[in-house]
Image 1: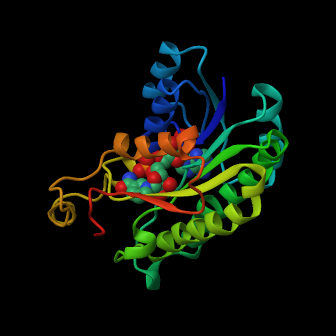
Image 2: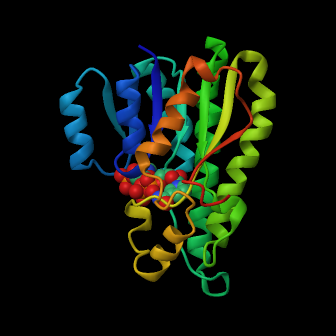
Length: 240
Ligand SMILES: NC(=O)c1ccc[n+]([C@@H]2O[C@H](COP(=O)([O-])OP(=O)(O)OC[C@H]3O[C@@H](n4cnc5c(N)ncnc54)[C@H](OP(=O)(O)O)[C@@H]3O)[C@@H](O)[C@H]2O)c1
């Protein structure tokens, strides 16, 4: 069974990706800080296919050891889905420096370090899949999310150059850019703002986490072997 590491798999998009990976026949290493009821249930239903590893990505110094332990315990991963992230909103002029530092650490530094150490296994395997979860906001912009947007744009930039670096080893690197999805991250965004985002959707509705997980499924599969260094947008057309 091929192993896929999914960060931020305790809820939201990461949980949907983990669920999809199981139905695609992968063994999933689900990473996060807090076990959720949904993940616990998924593990109960699929005891051979999904395992939880607790890790807080604000501890960037420990990522090397964490990656080594994962490889020792589960074997060399085929896929890595860098999905864990935080979303702190607020206009830049009043955003705390602490929030800016946290966004950069968890949304950029941590996935880059985890990729660096998981990549070693893929280089030995001469194959693998890396998927960096960005956002349409990286290119469209959104009032009050400038630093978050910067972190998401950084991941898309990371994807492109890394794809050039590792392509010869049969490893693909791609970006997933979801549009607004209803998850814990966006639960504060309700009422008028939510309705106006929905109104802008050509399809008349917003993409769900399951829709974005289908794109990850494709990017992890053999079918996507000629797709690298690109972005797949799943936003029900909101950025069209
Ligand atoms: N929701 C949207 O509208 C939307 C749109 C575009 C892009 N995205 C992107 O999609 C991805 C998933 O977002 P989501 O909406 O599913 O968010 P979410 O519901 O808030 O879930 C975030 C996940 O990341 C994990 N996480 C956060 N901080 C962590 C840390 N320090 N260490 C370890 N794990 C951590 C959380 O796990 P624990 O709490 O257990 O640690 C959780 O599993 C993110 O990259 C986000 O930027 C979301």
